Image (tube, rainbow over all chains, first blue to last red; front, side, top):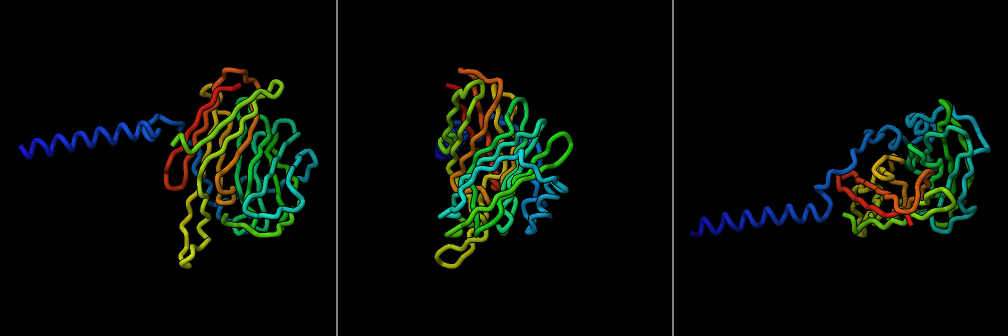
Length: 156
Length: 103
């Protein structure tokens, strides 16, 4: 009897776990994350190397990439950055903070009607150039602006 | 972990403007706690967005995205009633998802 009871409790527990997992969205057939995370680009300490490893090497300066960011950020842990590319045929965009221990912040690919626009909040260890690079028509373009940081925040 | 994600999608002219907030510590792996022990890296590293199930944005993130990440993006060709979905995963494999109807 104890055996039975134990088996029952064990099964009940298992079913409960599955139900919780489904409720939490853990077992939902989710989106497949297409590309492997670009470790080489994200761990590069040199901004030029990070850009190259991310596929944005040899980028031409362009004023058609518009970067919106504060001139002075009091708190480097949360710096709002908005970037728009007005270059026709823009397919992707990446953000770099040149003086961060890991300069590459993120890389975004636009598909099926997404506009070449991203708004986010980034971390800045200290005053630095914020650089945005884009891919358009098989070429790379870049633009940058300086953000002065009063209190560094590379860790939140 | 749907409760970790807040989303809003509104029409701005003929474009869907999406704003997403995810609760996440985004630990860089180089900060120390008060006992001088290194806090291991723990961060969202991939985020995918869909419009009515079709992928519109694929992104990879590093540790430089601020804590409790915010991301805003825009999609052409959407309309009120359309569904915008976001799926995210962190470096430990925890998945986060959210869905919102375009208002």
